[in-house]
Length: 89
Image (cartoon, rainbow, N blue to C red; front, side, top):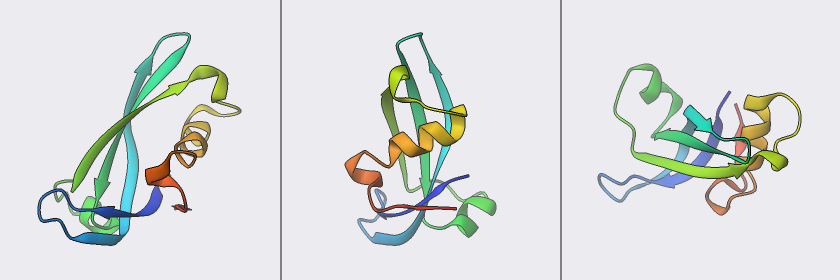
């Protein structure tokens, strides 16, 4: 599971219209979870092991997570500005 988004490549400033955002790690407390996301220029770039174009992390309140944990985290991510208008892949 991942999200297709438009993202700015932090290494060269280029807009990547098919960037691939994937949760790579998470941890937390009973109140909130920190979610780490790696963003690659494309899904193919991630599969080939190329470095990410931009790391990201967000905090999510546990109360906002409904249903299965991983899909719920992606659903909450889509409420953040940088992941709005994303597509599930």
